[in-house]
Length: 271
Image 1 (spheres, rainbow, N blue to C red):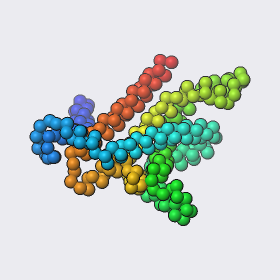
Image 2 (spheres, rainbow, N blue to C red):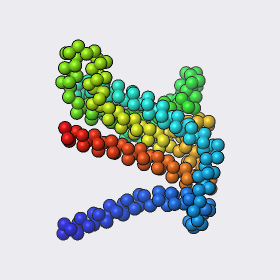
Image 3 (cartoon, rainbow, N blue to C red):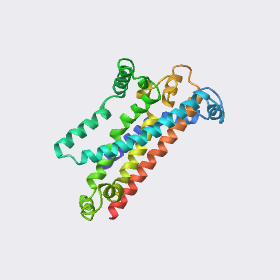
Image 4 (cartoon, helix red, strand yellow):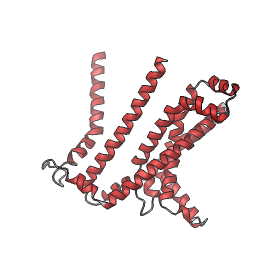
């Protein structure tokens, strides 16, 4: 019975993975198809990737996406790390309340998060006459920082819990300032969590569509928004090529995160 149950579970998992990844595999295959057909293979070609490179709309969207993703990841990592340090220093009950509040943006549907930010930016731009908050690059960047920061906090908090606080106290007793104790004692112990949060934030920004759709302006659309707009018309093979590139980039980043976590867990096990 155990062998039969084990075999059924393996078959079930295989079917789940096939259902999840078969569409992506087909997308990648047809990005090299020498035809606009999405059902019949007409030979191998790279012309859709070459056409993609010369598409000014997509190149501009790529520049916006990279700029927003990099800036949002860096700023969110700094803010998330500082927030994690502050939350960790709280007593148990306030800490639990703050972590619960931190989880709310991640549990909310993206469409609610995006619409609420859009309404806030519109209110600030029109009712409060703050023209800087008109939908554009700044609002897009602020939106990405907002939904990235909770992920950084969740990445750094476990490292803070694993940290030996006696080392920090010993450094302070030996004459180190707060900044010196943080730099030479705390930072090396939470560095892996900070890097994980940085990579995760960058990945989340590249992958986002819904929030970017509601908070970007007409000249600051990201790749995700551009792809979504293209799907309303006849789907071009250029979209397959673009999605393939984005999938590979995100996959490499996720592999990097997992390899780093495995290495850090291995180092902790050896110690």
